[in-house]
Image (cartoon, rainbow, N blue to C red; front, top):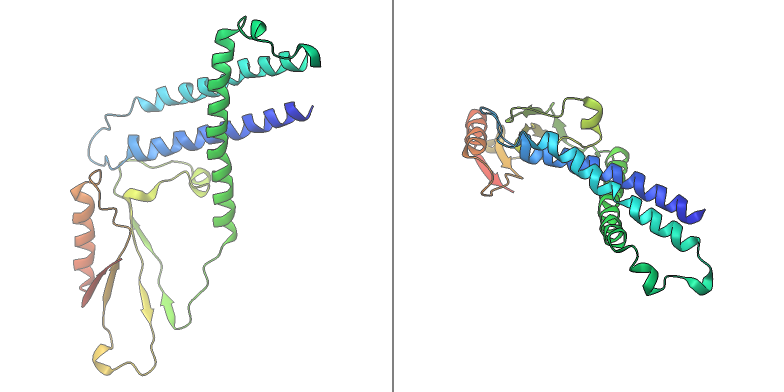
Length: 216
């Protein structure tokens, strides 16, 4: 009974991991930063779900194998002659077990990550007044359901978030009153990022008209 319960729990976590993998590929590859053209990876929307489900469904040979082991007596457990009777089942069982572990690990990480984010609150800093942030979407499409976005399904890699903070410092020299600093971080300088992403960043910085630009 305990083995079956653990097996069911692993399967549920693996299905959750499948969903997270699908949403990750959807955000990173299919939608990506394809804002002004049709994505060449649109077909993944239809191919990936059945593929992930098929990989997860390989647990069935594994389950059959487990049932077979549990049904044998202690003196007749897993002899080579009987294993040879199920070569394909044993091969698929190993693949199914490996995928269950990988997908379940992704599912567990997703749950832990969301619990951490949802239970952690930003502590307001003394002497800092923050305005509302503005998100500049640079992609053609996004995850359409707000509930999925709250679960962390939305990958904001290709979006720009602009925040404004006014800092009050005691004994600040008069010459620095109104001094503007543009701080850029997480710009993801890599080959897969398109130049339009950086052109938009430069445009936003220039519109802010900063006295100093810092790269973090």
